[in-house]
Image (cartoon, rainbow, N blue to C red):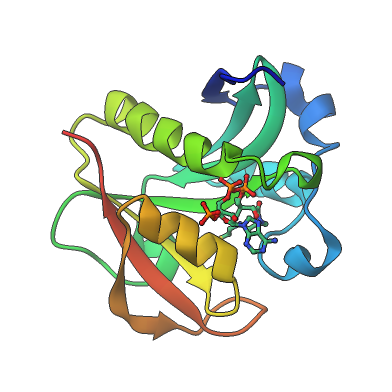
Length: 165
Ligand SMILES: CC(C)(COP(=O)(O)OP(=O)(O)OC[C@H]1O[C@@H](n2cnc3c(N)ncnc32)[C@H](O)[C@@H]1OP(=O)(O)O)[C@@H](O)C(=O)NCCC(=O)NCCS
């Protein structure tokens, strides 16, 4: 990896599936994100859901999904036009090098370009997921106050972040 990694985000089209399917998180982190295969299949079935790849110097290192309907994230609506972010992760081999931080910046700028009318991004993060919580807070996301109790791994903070203007 270069000293100045080129982090980009692109739609996860079928040509990228073989490499994306090799991405995974550390075993204890599986409480927080599902396998890429499940997420890709789910995104293909959900009209408003787009699977995205995170690239470092053109190599896939991570994955996430964008939801046009924020209600699908935390079962609630928002006053401003809001997109949902889910399943954001950096592959285990690439974690701890600052790439998650860079990737989240790239995600937010890409979202503003693809969805110029959107104002905010909502996501949920497990209350036990300290690294992710810190990452989102540093990127400007704030807890909305309530906990979301859906999902398989316990309560989650609902966080909202403003897209760049
Ligand atoms: C959360 C995640 C995306 C961070 O990616 P990353 O590339 O490791 O992030 P960075 O290297 O930019 O580090 C971000 C911060 O988290 C800290 N961090 C990273 N991994 C950590 C770990 N295992 N334990 C504690 N802190 C950790 C880093 O020290 C850094 O904090 P700092 O800037 O104060 O030093 C990654 O750990 C991940 O994919 N986790 C599993 C999936 C997940 O939980 N996704 C979020 C779902 S809501």
